[in-house]
Length: 222
Image 1 (cartoon, helix red, strand yellow):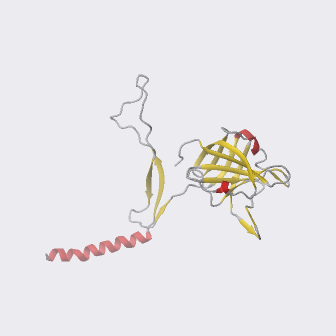
Image 2 (cartoon, rainbow, N blue to C red):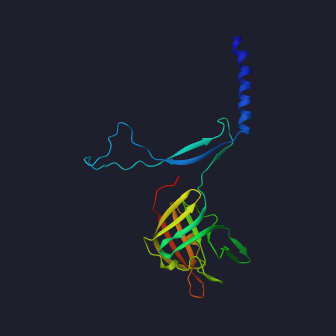
Image 3 (cartoon, rainbow, N blue to C red):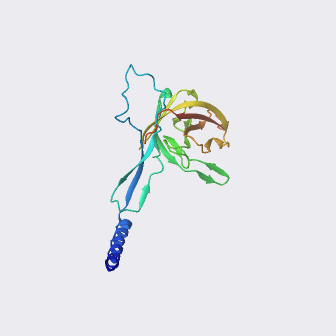
């Protein structure tokens, strides 16, 4: 019994040291995607093998940590990186993408999109995560055609590529349509990953908006 009482202060000191290290030693945690691989007991695929009937396993998130295990200041990477470049092969567009915050002036609410790049609307999703990724660009500028001057030429099935620090994300156009300039329903978040490209209709009035919707074509990049 006496030996147990001697060990209690020692255990308390060890625990205090552990907590002190934990408060000063951060651990970084990122989420990656790991697809299950066949085990040694599974037969290898061959031309004589019958077609598989089971579906492919769903990729599962895997946590990777770095830094001392004692760290308790955890950083969970729950979002992907924002877009930095947009490519649309059909219309020969490759343009930088810059973050754009909304601005309110009087009774006017708008996004000051740069004339030489596309703008990723802050608050919308990033490529590679669920949600609506809203990217807009000018159809024309004071100095000539804008980055989305030929956006109206896109058709369902066309490819749109978005790049970020997390890699390359490929989308396929599913629809194009026109809305009034004050219709912001196309900016609503969605439960699945969706890319929304927006520009003005080049009619000289600019009261209408051309919208191109695209869905993800390639697999998870993480």
